[in-house]
Image 1 (cartoon, rainbow, N blue to C red):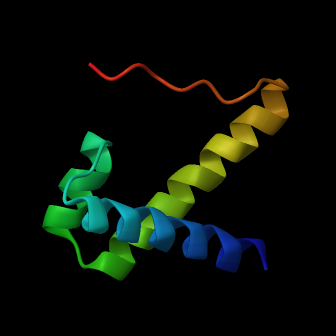
Image 2: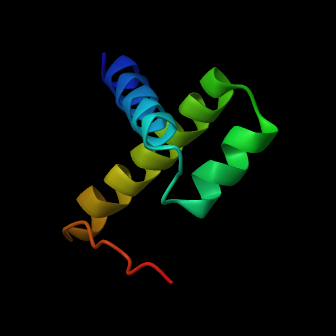
Length: 68
């Protein structure tokens, strides 16, 4: 169930980026240029899962990085 939710969330992020016409995350923009949408969504879901796990283990809140 969690895997499905993460992939659904990743697809939402990708859809929003396509709707805006640009992607704020350079990693995701590069992934979308190189890979099919669904592959990029699964990769983004994996990235989100690893971040969530790290936040749970370290007991820290999510910190948004400033755009460079």
